[in-house]
Image: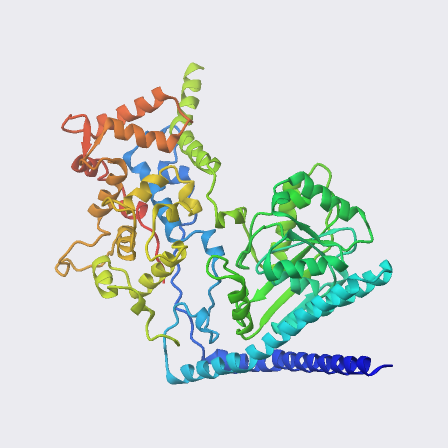
Length: 427
Length: 194
């Protein structure tokens, strides 16, 4: 047992105990401290003077344009006033619409002492400013440095160990150890963000050879789910730090990373997914069918790709509590590193994860209907609004099919009735 | 940094805007948030594609015309005060104004609302809605759902009813007259609640 080995061992032991110490501190801080602050501070906080716009209960186009004339025989002639309906509904959507507001952070009812969540809250008194200042000191002086250290150590250790495990010749030992290493990595990341996670219904945890789908709010969703059990991740191969992490992960466990060019090829993607799923020894695949981050007040359209494969789906609902720190990543407002730093300087990330019972595609149900059914279950569990809109609207425009629907409706009001009339006259 | 004394400070000419449009400061703040939300690239002004990104507007048959109404003076950007001034047209008319107090006409008066709607028809801004302009609007609202003859007959009927001086076009006064009995306030107002 040479001196070199001894030094190595001691050093390692020291490092590891430091980690555990930090982890302990952060979890202590995470639990009692945060809740205590909020119990005392929230009553003093400011209520937001939210100004809401009413959406007139959607009077149908027909009702509005025909007016209250209920007798069916008077069919409606075109009136110059008809344009008002379209004009008003157009301007209403400029002022507030269901979709655009899902792509920016949710507004809070009372202020949680973070400047970034300060929308309409007005300065009230010295006491609040003092509390805010104290909060600032704590967050940036104590919490942030601790968390950053933890994160950096965690990721380096993770990379180190996965590479090490990747060298092992024995496959069984390798997969066992890699699972342990991955869990360690995720748990460290979770505690570096002081994420306080409550898992519900653990008996429904996804099993091997299936696909797990969840609603997407932040890049952290992955870490939150993966600290409870190991998943195979699917995604695009990135460059830089993230790319390095991705290659590290793949060495010891079967993740599915695609090149930029392969992403476009839907058949290739589907094939790789179904191959993975068919192998019952492989971990379940984790997929976020929305395709983009939504602000956790709603669930948007699920892309049908993962529902076409035909295996069991385990839905998972993730709901964040925005009072402790808003986890939504608005990729147009800030980059990943800035986002992570702002996560680490919030109070905490508090979320609930519900594992829902597995679902299979039923007879006569196509992929889209199945996807909608799963989406509705997730939305119901998480208390989120179920929307049909595509999350891709964040970056692209609505297609013209919707416009045609409105045109059809209006033409029925004007002209469709004429057809009925002429038929009646013929008789 | 810190809880700023009033976020109203970030809105230029807030008091002036409030006087001219009749919005309260809470409403103005809310609209400013919305303006910032629509202004995805944080440029401080809006361009036509920021409007087109709004789903409800993109699927509206006359969405393009509504967008044009914001860019009426030939510019291709809309700053916050123009944004608010246009939206002020859609405030519900204040019922209990005392008549003597008002010096200037607020944007949400009946006439101004009608003028806004008139502009949606009158594309070339010549003060008259010609037959061709009416046909264009009808085409937009109905798309391919009706035949050209039906469109022509609808336009014909509408012009005959409204055109009083028989110049084959509808002026603003004729437009106003034909809509005398219509409750403009309800149809052209958006409910702003506190």
